[in-house]
Image (cartoon, rainbow, N blue to C red):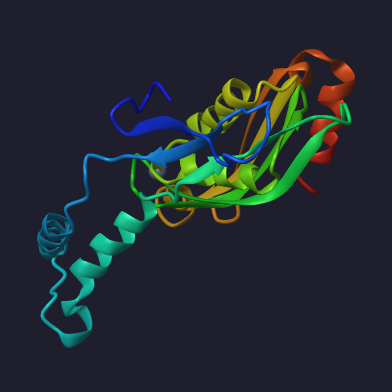
Length: 218
Ligand SMILES: [Zn+2]
């Protein structure tokens, strides 16, 4: 979070006023930008294409600068969500793992697509998380220009801070268009990053289980 102090903010709301204690507020996660100026982005996209020698005079390309602006605005606008947690009444203490969560982002060096999957797991502490929220956390941090290493660590750190589990593990496998479409043209290569925290890092059995379950299939 600290990398984006101007772009993110968190506020807490009571999700359900009728729910009896223990009233732990659901965390409303919203993404604030400095404001997207679509008209300015469209004008700049037109100049960008022009500078690259691409004419936008044909009927087919006339709307391209506007479509570019709206496409990037969408990529950089994650949906807000509530981080709903529940008491771990059953004392469940085994791994909770969501595999193959889609990852779609752009690299911050070339603004070219990065597409892959994330495996996100945790060892529950006092609270457990609505399962779909693991995917929402990934989406939240993916909706901005990224580097894969930071994205992986941000998802893990955020869950550690807000869920306070006994351990967190995040593995991301992704293909970077800036490597496959240009440059070294390493078609088919993907990049693997991982962050392990708490018991998933320090306990050999938990760590081994997590890594076995998230292993890239040969
Ligand atoms: Zn790149």
